[in-house]
Each structure stands twice: as C-alpha cells, then as structure tokens.
Amino acid sequence: MITQNETSQNGGTFGSLSNLLLVIIMILGVFVAILNETLLNVALSKIMNDIGITPSTAQWLSTGYLLMIGVLIPVTAYLIQRFTTRTLFLGAMCLFTVGTFIAAIAPGFTTLLLGRVLQASGTGLLFPLLTNVVFSIVPIEKRGSAMGTIGIVITFAPAIGPTLSGIIVEHYSWRVLFYGVLPIALFVILFAFFKLKNVTETTNPKIDPISLLLSTLGFGGIVYGFSSSGTEGWSSLGVLIPIAIGVIALVLFTWRQLTISHPLLDLRTFKYTIFRLSTLIMMIIMMAMFSAMMLLPIFLQNALGYSPFKAGLVMLPGGIVMGIMSPITGRLFDKFGAKVLALVGLGLIAITLWQFAFITLSTSYSTIMIFNTLLMLGISMVMMPVMTNALNELPPALYPHGTAIISTLQQVAGAVGTALLVSVMTNSSSRFMENTVMKDDSTLPILAMIAGMKSAFLLAFGLVAIAWIASFLLKRASSQELNMKQPSPN
Image (cartoon, rainbow, N blue to C red):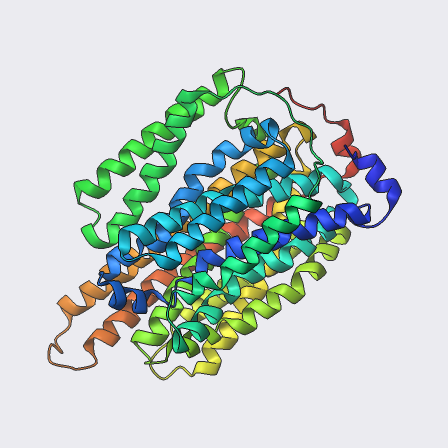
C-alpha cells in the first residue's frame, strides 16, 4: 500500500514510476471504453440500413449504453472497497472485451444491443476506479495536474469518436468499429495481468439489496422514460410511468441511504457545498457535450448533405484542443482553483451553444467546425477542474462514494440530456411541419430540422447559463482545510 505521504516524498505528480505505469495502464483501458460512448453516433445510419431498424430503435445503441452505465456505477463505491484494484480492473476490461466481440459479430439488433450492454458494464467500473486510484496516490496540491493528465484521454476519447467513426464507416463496415477496438482491449488485459498492482485498501462492506433495487429502478426508470419520449411523446404512459417510478424509487433510495448504517452510496457527500455545486455543473456539462455530439452529425448529414467522414471530421479539431488543454487546465487549477476556469469555460460554452442555435443552410462547414472547437475548449476548461475541486472537498473515506456519485449523475445526465434534446428537436420539427404553409416545399424537412435544432440548442444554452451563475459560488478546498476534516465512517 502506498500512502499519499509516501507518494509526496517520492516526488513527481504520481509519486513513482510504478504509480505512473499503473495509471497509464488504467488510462488506456478507460480510453477505449469511453471512446465507445460516441463511436456509433456517425455510424447509426449505416447500422440502421444494414440490420433494418428505425432511428428510434437505433438510438438505444447509444442511450442503452449510457443507461447501463448509470445503473451500474452506484455499485462501484461498494466494489472499490470490496475488491482490489487489480481484480476490478481486469474484470471490467474482460466484460468490455466480451461485449465488443459480441457487438462485432452481431447478426441483428438484439445481439448488438447485448454487446453494447456488456461493454457498458465494463466501462461503468473503469472511470470511478481510475479516479479513486488517483486520489489515493496523489497529494491534494498535485491533483489538478494529475487529473489534467488523465483528462487528455478522458476528454479526447469521446471527442474523436465521431471523427474516427466517420473515417471508418466511409470506407468499411461499421463492424470494423468493434473489431478495431478488440486488439487494444486484449493488449490492456494482458499488460494489466502482468503489471497492474493494488494501491487501495479493501474492506468488507455490506451491500444492501433494497438500495441496489431502488437505485436500478430509479436511475433506470428516469433514463428509460426520457429516452422513450422522442418516439412516444411526453403524454404517453410509456414515458410518464417509467419516469414516475424512477422519481419515487430515487426518493426512497435517498431516504434509505440516509437512514441505514452501510449505505450503497453515502449521500453525506452532498453536505459539502462545493461538492453539490460542482456535481450540478458537471451534469449540465455532460448534457451540453453529448447533445452537441449527437445533434451536429445528424444535422451535417441529413440537412447539409455531408458524408459520414466529413460529419465526423468536424469534431476532430475540438478533440485535439481538449487533449492539448487538459494538462494545461490541470496546472492552472493547481495554481488558481476551479472558479476562474469555470466562469471562462462556461461562458465560452454558452456563447457557442447560442451560435449553434442560429445556424442555417448557408452556414459554412468551417464555421461549424470553429464553433465546435470553441465548445470543446470551454468544456476542457471546466470538466476536470470542477470534478477535481468537488472531490478535493471530501475526506478520504468518502472518495469512493464521491467518485461513484459524480460518475453516476454524469452518465445519467448524458443519457437524459441526449434523449431530452433529441426529443425537443423532434417535437419542434414536427410542429414546424404542421404549422408551415409551404406544404409542397422540397426543403421543408430540412427547414423543420433547423427549427428543431434551434429549440434544442437554446434549451442547452439555458442550462449552461444556470451552471455559469452557480460557478460564482465555487471555492477551492485547501490542503490545510482537507487535513482538518475527519474521515467519515464506512
């Protein structure tokens, strides 16, 4: 076991060469896993044609992935305390690899969705595990730089997903998206088997089956309801009932976590003001990022007629900027804290979302690329600094619960936000079609899509404006303040 004091004495951001190797192995695994969250966005059209499914059904290949992660991550706090780093990482990577293989050979939608669910099962464990390991081996004054290093791949992976997908599906089958990931995943498993060590302490926590059931019903019901709204409409019982069940289950889940001695998720983390504010901001950022990654490729292909390659390529500069900026913002966080970065970054995000709301058929490809690059620049200034700031405020005993809570709410926000904004776009487009007098205009479907995009991006702008106002209340937790806190009991 390597303590933070020993790490600090050894020098360097991660303390030692063995710690650095550990983080590199885990980062590579997390990279290929997170890459899959956005890898299919551009490829959905070809998958729909190949296996004969509708757009609403195809959406579940992305939304179902996020749904599974959102349902699974609450359990990670228990798993991180119960099992070793090595066992959890290898188990998660094996799940992900098996899912990738099943998706690659899938003959139809059901098998493909099964593969995606297994992929998500592995992904849901990996990022909370990596974050908890970093907070266990890196002293507080160096965590910004450490998380910034991690952010190179954490933010770069989803950003380049559409570009990589566009290049591949332009020339090859969509199955190559999965076959290409397999060798990397197998290499990570082999490397981890021989080199991965344990750095966190294990205990023997109890798991509450009722909490697990309520968590699954709560997060699953809400995401399922929102995801169904685009096809069934908000007045449908198939939408309202799952959402109602989800809300009731989450209320009961919250009550139970606060009243039992061994909670599945220790919600006392929300007693810390900065953790509450940062979690809200992170959720909104995820909604904005995933909505842009979902809506822009659809608009570029269906409205402007660009190929999958060009639709994906528009995301590439933004991904590169995020990769470059992540370590820089990490060092800036260590020096100045999260507040300044959040104010500037969220302001930039809000401006670009406003610009996206008013794009037209005459908006040039390069202009859309520049807007998206500025959007990703803003996100890179906010995401990792705000998350690091949130976890810094917690005592060490709450790190597993804090990382699990933030990761859960991020993924649920991404799934709900994507479903909500796609629903808003669809409904606004339908209203435009119904209310227009130009029934015979051949460009009517495209104009309707533009109207729908405007409504969706204006909603995203409003949410980011709320996050920007909330960021004025951010402050940083100093090392002295953290050392004064008493660890909470498990």
